[in-house]
Image 1 (tube, rainbow, N blue to C red):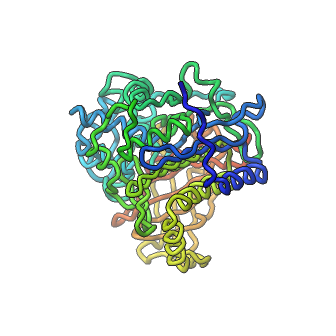
Image 2 (image 1 turned 90 degrees about the horizontal axis):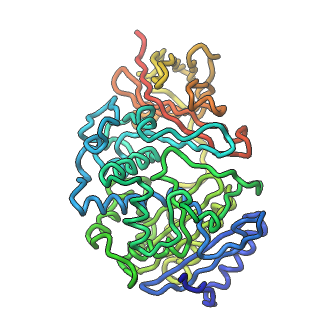
Length: 492
């Protein structure tokens, strides 16, 4: 029996008002929150509509699409296998993939470990790809996704690149080692033992009636969609159950929860093993924020079509906060973030003061300063020629670096264009260009190209990513970011 909604605590009245005002002012469908301190649940409440069309209100037990909060849930499953002796985080991930092995273009395959896949430093690229039920395309198998896109485009350990593909592959590892589907393993080994009765990969049988529909920024309903990286993005969960998950990772195991992980494994997940920003790190599925004095925040956010979510815990203060929203766009993102900040500030008064001081110290670095004009290193000047390598064949790519800072680009026989927003930092060239890669996946939507190329002596190598222009996709749908190994050599 699901417990009654906890919505009596008057400490949160000002936050309630902010939520209600934000939903109305910005046309956001709904938001659900859940808060705990220690072993006590302080607040659970839903606001707005889980389903506008059917007039179903949001509650703490409404199942929201979590997007990337799926990642620490997936790695919880991964750590179960580690503790059973079925997995070594520091072994090459190819050892667990059978014939569906990652292809290595730079660095060594032995260095592409499970741990590096989990902390986004394996060399795998930017990736997302969504499939809508009202379109004639369906998600390929994970074996096929790995064949098409499982290419290391940086040397393992060289560069932090957030990769949904990596987490899709971790889900495949879980399935192969457990002998169950990823969805079945998560239900049987994570959700049910933790008492997460309304948690599922996608929407499990009988769960449809509990879902929060996903809405775009204009308030239109998204058709149901899935993706080719389910272990990165596809978990649904209620605020009530996600709070139970967060409390477990605070080591506040509720009486009806099984100890699916040791405390040592929980600690290991929260240790940052790579930097992901000036004050941020990434562990095993968790982001770790060290920017607020005295308060290390462990958590993960999520964002995709009709989804804005946040799960944050502060282990030292034993506080867990969940904020889930089925809206889209900047206003929904800002509301979710602000509600989480307000809750921490209410429960931990020094948090608000320390956060304000931290932001003030960082402010000079964040002032709106114009990007300096691009001036290429002399070693870059001239013509570079090579190919974008796709699973359907190679496409010629040429770059011309001019002394005035312009970079001209041509993909195949397409028109020559400029590389926009070029940057060259730490021997890495990034920029955006007009161009079309024609494969069975990329031709679904209009797209441009994002280049991320590392200079290695007389070569530029890395990824060319076909990224959807969301403004031209029906209903502002999120389409794809599909990356291909790219290598250019400077012409004599």
